[in-house]
Structure formats: structure tokens, C-alpha cells
Picture 1 (tube, rainbow, N blue to C red):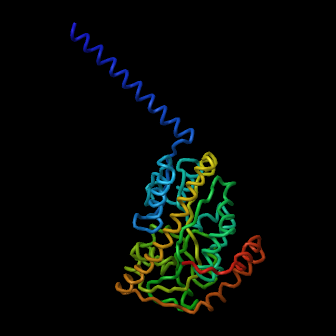
Picture 2: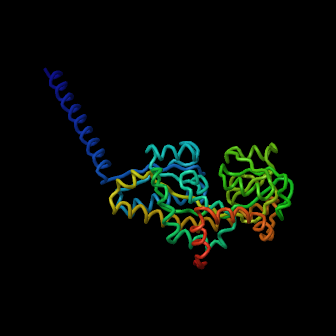
Picture 3: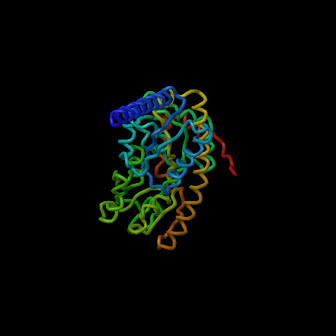
Length: 341
């Protein structure tokens, strides 16, 4: 008798637990669907020590704080969900909500982003950020809507410079015949061809071994990436020619963005802008640290006269000054420098 009673009590408690669990799951699911609580899935290709990676963590903290805990971000770093091509496909298909993308990779989806691949269109870092923080930058972030992509903010990725294994690059003549790794970007390929080198698109993850094995003679990138990926172990010459300044972008699936309330959009945008400004500070600090570290590791830095490089790539600029990018290039050129604190 007692055993039957205990069995019934256990059954009632078990069923009550199941019902409560299902009710909680339905409540949680409804909260996610109705927009009262939102968890974003964000992926990127960078290691945790990278300034952009740290800034995305900072953004997640800021968003949680601003939204009162109703909006949170789960971050998947270091290509755990695939490379940028795979992640972009996942974003367009709604598998992930947000990702960090290079401006060069966005050329395929947003033709206007080709402008970042044009050499020497920004006079300096202040000019670069005045453009991106102004109307031009805001407009470019919305240009991917037909591809289900919406841009939220930009991150600093510095200037791109040549580094080589066997000799310094002091003028375009030093690039003649050199095999230089480039991003898989039409703009990057054209630029390197004009300078007399042989552009070789290679995945960034395979670049170290390609340099080590002599498949390529050098590459072009920013200094923090050169340092953090230990390319200084193979390449002992780094030239600050600063041929392009291509930002990183934080992008979101357009449907996800549109499902957010106007208040949620404001919160997310505010958190992203705070992270963008935080990352710029980190970037400058990281660049200086990388410079000092690489000097101690035997890397020889050169600061060539850019006039010879600008003259060599002039045909590329003239071509696009007659294209659909002409109005955009004119606006960028006419944007004044603005010194930032």
C-alpha cells in the first residue's frame, strides 16, 4: 500500500516537473520570438588577442548592460564556424546573426566597397575616420541590403604594407618579379600587378607555410597581423608604404536586423559604436607594441617615399575616376581631414 502511494507521488512530481519544464521552454522560446529577449550568434576569424576580437567581447558586455540584460551575444572566434566565405554564406542564410568581415571581402556583395581597395585615396588616418564616421560611411553600410547584409559599424584594420623575405621594398622597382600574396580581391590583384609584382591569392591561414616554403616572396598586410601571425620569423623586411586602408566591418543578417524593434536597433548600434571607438584605441596601442617587438626580433623597417608608388598606380585611379565610383571618389577627396583626440 505504501509502495503504491509513493509510486503515485513520484509519478505526480515527475509529470509536474515535465510540465513546468515545457512551460518554461515555451516561455523562453516566446520571449526570443517576440523580441523581449534576444541572443545573437556572432562569428569571426580572429584570435582572442586581436583588437577587433577584444572589442567584440566589449560590445557584448556593453549591449547586455545597455539593454538591461535583454540582448546578449554568443561569440565564436578563430574560424570555429569556418572562414570568412563560409561565415558570410551562413550569415546570408540566417545560420549566424552577425560576423566580422574584411572590407575587401565585401566587394563581391557591395560594389561600392571596392573604393577601399583603391590606393592612396585617404590622405591620413584622420581623413579615413572622418569619411567612415560621416555620411559616406553610413551610406556604404546600407548598400548590401539586396544581399541580405546590413552593416552596423567599422573597425580599424590599419594600413596595408609590403613585407618580404629577401630584400626591402623601397620603391616599386623592388617589387618587380616578386610573388606577393594578396587577398582574393580584384582590386588587390590589380594594384600589385601595376606595381610590377606577381599577385598570388592565398588563404591567410596558409600564408605562413607559403612564405616559409618560398611559394611567395612576400605579402601585404598591417603590422599587428604581421606580428601576431609570426610572419617576422620568415620575413625580415617590412616597408611602410601604406598603399591601402581597408576597414573591417561588423555585419548582420538583414532579416534579423529588421525583426528588432527600433529601441533594440538603437541599443545594438550604440554598443557597436562604443566598441568601434574602443578598438581604435586598442589598434594604435597594438601597432606600437608590434613595432617595438618586431624591431627586437630583427625586422628591418623602411619608410619609402610614397610618390613613386602613387605615380605607378595612377592608371588604376584614373580608370575608376571614369566609372560608377567617380562620385564617391570625389566626395572622399573633398572630405576634409579632422584631427581626433
